[in-house]
Image 1 (cartoon, rainbow, N blue to C red):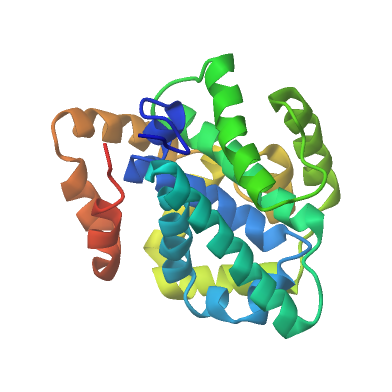
Image 2 (tube, helix red, strand yellow; image 1 turned 90 degrees about the vertical axis):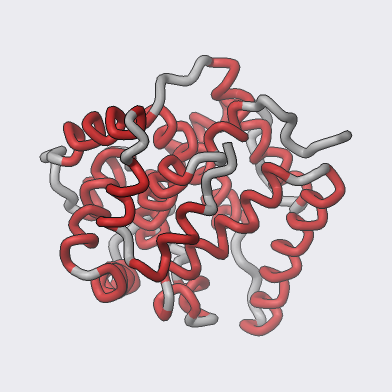
Length: 252
């Protein structure tokens, strides 16, 4: 049976655990808010109206690609392309190529950062494999200007962080929505999660704390996973309406 991402791939390990996915999107939620093309996310109104729902919708598409057979994964990528094309048609503008690349770059970077935070450091071959999966996603979407190797991606990633991010009124509003939908205690956990995974440039623009009080708690949580107590902890922290969604993220 042919798969877009082969069984046993490190990318399946990364995207097969709800804990890792939550940290991926903690980082992405920070960087999305700074992206100079964030106005596109406001065009439909879906992101500010329901940022958590949008997260799980995005996760659904990503997991279809990672865990589906090849043809089904290609169909999922094509649906993503069609959705964006419809938004472009509605606005009568095209989403910039660099904005599409930024999203892919985020998924590569935060996949690596989140896994290394919660599990272990990836090998160079595993880093390259993570890049390759999302490069093939971008190629299927016919995105222009993609880097061809992990090493090229690293260079372009730094360039994009320097060029395509800025603090704006969209940033301020999106963080206001995060606080509104999460509540103050969970909002501060989100901020600390972002501190642990975002690049220094993102931290600087958002003026996030350099204090990492969540880091020792992550180590405690890892131990609790060994004792099968992690679900109890997540049930205490997560909004009740999303507990089942998070449980369903665990594929391995």
